Length: 585
Ligand code: AMP
Image (cartoon, rainbow, N blue to C red; front, top):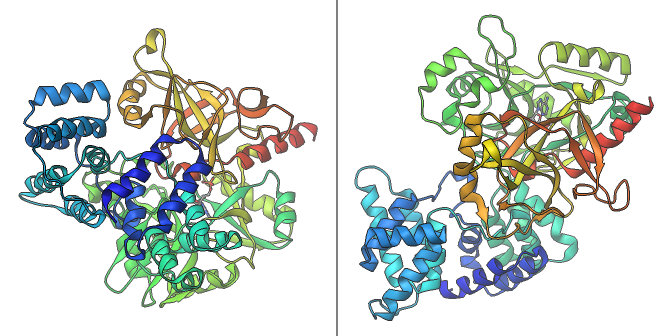
């Protein structure tokens, strides 16, 4: 396919904020894409060149892109920088720069192929070591010399990591299902994605072989699978009702979910966001290597820092700075080593266990691991007795856990699903109704007085799974330190959008709209009915939504969560109803 054709679709996607319209445009695009190119086209449309877990990222520095624009246009540094300041989007700068040069007749006219663009972007992302900077510059310059103005706009946006068409994974899933399957088969497409974590693969199989081909997309070691999640319930009584009596209770450790893939040659750790976090946890790599007794496998658990002197579980914050930084990992690992509490086994010796029952998988886990100091089994009790569960719950809280996770013993592993086969019950929720929720930043309200020049408050939203949108639940203005506030413009500036993001549902105006990206932990004593927020609007009362009252930022950025992993509207509704029950006794 010619890149110009793809760009014409991008222009249409860029112009709409309606998710349905986006899906229709994508269906049209996928139908006319040759099957052997659909993989690349899916990645490019999401502003990437490979699935997350591969860790191949674009994100060329803005300064470098500017250097290339200066070089190919012959314009001065200052002119290009000034145009960037004015437009705030390097893609638009590239578009006008190329336009001017083209008018001067300086560029070749041969059409640019998608494949060629993709290969060059891949080479840019993978260039490493000595001379790599020059190699990146040369590749980008070559592309831009061949590009027409609109093509240049999207090439530059992609290469600096700011494509931002607002096309989400689930929009692509919908479009793929509509293009290559029936409405009833949509869930099968989503499941294939949840198991393979690679929309590109799902698309190329679908386009080439149709829905039946998806059966061949298996769980594989080295390729993370989306985690199974849990719904929140307010009382132990409801746990038993939901899970149908006897079930497994486990401590809910407050740490980082780790999916560990083991082969004879390597141990790799993936986060819940499917990022490869192996290098941050050398102590876990070493411990799993010696504890694992099968040939290969995928095991899952929660990593929690433990005080080496007292054996006490520590707050996760003590190791959260390990994320995304370069530092002396070994020294940090020795100071606050992490212990992995395992609860699941998804694959053993090449065999996919996800369709087996939880009881069975947990049993298999015990045969592939010899527990030790750094790798243990999650503390667990099977019971149908409320008093026994209650005692276990108290014990968990006293040891520094968040509460319990209860699991249906006969449940299969539902990748990516948040359902009632696994449920969580947390402390604060039972007692004082003080609980944290994880909300997504979708907008900013300009600061006044001391906060002039930064964002005085953030507009926060919960995730609504059925519509795949973010619905507002509060304005967050407390809990920010001055240092934190000073970092906001830098943090949120790059996410700023011209208009409300297509997947944000808000009845309120904001001074700025952001691409939903950051998830913040928010504490609030109460959930109330609200006429201005859209979360659960109409569910309790006509015309009213639900909002977090007196919200306060706890200081914890949930970088381990994707926006889609934020607290859901359904959970907030559940909390609101539980609250009523608690009040009424
Ligand atoms: P939440 O983040 O509140 O939705 O709770 C779900 C998270 O709890 C999972 O993603 C895990 O990281 C964590 N967790 C802690 N202990 C367990 C456990 N025993 N079983 C499953 N998940 C657990």
